[in-house]
Length: 68
Image (tube, rainbow, N blue to C red):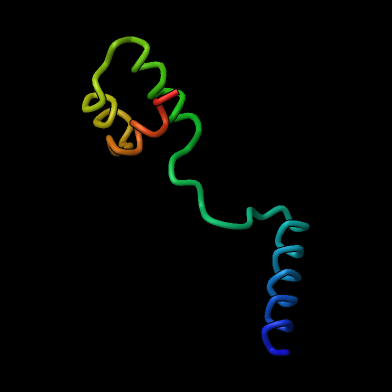
């Protein structure tokens, strides 16, 4: 029964936060503008190391963002 109450409280808290305009869930790791800048640099022929240095995004994350 307590598990049900906990789930209801969590659902209510999420609904209240969304209604107030707050983002619910895990925070965004890297802003969209930085990812787009990384795509631009990759299109210009920059290496992952150079892009990582300029944007501050780790190389492992760049591989994930720029793979497709």
